Amino acid sequence: MSGTFAALSDSLSAKGIDVEGVISKLKRQHIETPSWGYGNSGTRFRVFPNAAAARNVHEKIDDAGRIHKLSGIAPSVALHIPWDYVDDWSALGQYASHRGVSIGAINPNVFQDEVYMLGSLCHPSADVRAKAVDHMAECCDIMRSTGSDILSVWLADGTNYAGQDSIRGRKKHLLDALQKTYKVLPVGSRMLLEYKFFEPAFYHTDIADWGTSFALCQRLGPQAEVLVDTGHHAPGTNIAYIVAQLLDEGRLGGFHFNSRNYADDDLIVGSSNPFELFVIFTELVSAGSLADKVAYMIDQSHNIEPKLEAMLLSVLNCQVALAKALIVDYQALAAAQAAGDVLGAHRVLVDAFDTDVRPLLAEVRRRMNVPTDPIAELRESGIVAKLAEERSKGDQPRVGLGSG
Image (tube, rainbow, N blue to C red; front, top):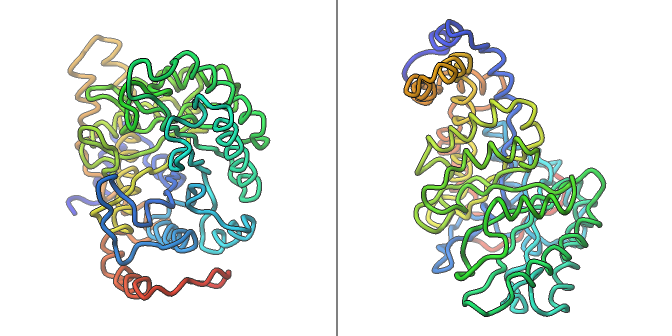
């Protein structure tokens, strides 16, 4: 590791940056991990099994607890229903608590059943739409039982051929179904509405972009906000611009972080375009209190990567991006912008992005009593080999509340 925290601190302080304030904000960072990222999942073509992968929701929560213990900034785990279905949701919430995490967003699944071949909330059949709405309501009940305050909605709805269905008719069905779901949201909770510009539907998708999601949220009410998946955009899309617009309108609900090349979106966040992730975080930092309610969640299905290390690296990449965004000299940036100094303003951002923040993050982790090098700690702990041995035997894990 090049440099020291003292030298970096002196350099940042000379620019007028409150280093202790930066550390305080980094200690409060919260990145939610997804249960499905700990199990065997991946592309539609082939899922390569990993011997250490979690086999059920209890093992997924165990792994989420391990990631939080290593990073200190991943205190909640999102669930996908029915993939993570259990009979006693209150007991599952207690189980998570004893593993050092809480239950985060609840994600309904209205795309895998055969009945949803032509859609779910937008399906031409009223019976199928009713089935999908019932599932949404069931997920709201799960939220109440687990203490979750976010319903994270993504739909695979769309059409493959021109004339297959009425686009305007499907829009009416969608709004009606979402309004029914909105009415049964738990008090104080939020519905985050995700979008994807194509796939698995290839002629049109029913929630194709942030504008469609935003318009629906405006119709639904203040508990509905847009969820930005960083991989769900056409090449060349300026995601930071979308983030800024939604922040300014008070409708940015949260993120699903991942990365992409071409069409799919399950690469590790920050792996293919770390500067893009950085500028997204600069928009969030510069927005101040406007970003207070934003939920930060990983959405990745690691296929060829080791599950725990991939998830830990994802969390740490978000931490690095925030650290660099927090050390931007925003006063100098504003002065350059006001003066019309195009490249001067750009260099302010590049200067922060190029800064080696590893000494800063090591200091943050030291103060949080977590490993200063979480990846090295995971690799040297032997836990992955131990889990592979235990989980390959086929024994079901304990579901009690003992330590683990």
